[in-house]
Length: 163
Image (cartoon, rainbow, N blue to C red; front, side, top):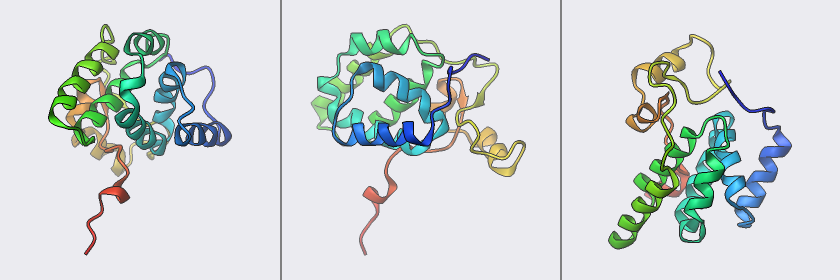
């Protein structure tokens, strides 16, 4: 299995969070951080939100080139599809966003559909109940991109109903 040359440290993740929050990111960072999401679902939540807000300013062709340099390019597909599914868009912009996603992910194959590996790395006990549930109750968005997972990468607190 190919992978990252270095696993992101806590300092790396904190730096990514800060840069996303101040909107100091480019295509290379989005591509790299989409790989880091496998180690930290919170980064996935932030990337989904960032993509939903900033997609019109992100160069789809450049992001496509950058994601193809990464070891797990299909990871970005999961982030993009979750942004599409859970982002709040006007109808016309939703259609444009879907076409933008198609441009970003053009030529990117899913991970090995035969292997169906766990999307998140090091977050589940090997052979444990959560890992079993990931395998048996995996969301379609993960399976479509060749992974197993159940996490919806949106900030759940933002969707909490006040009562």
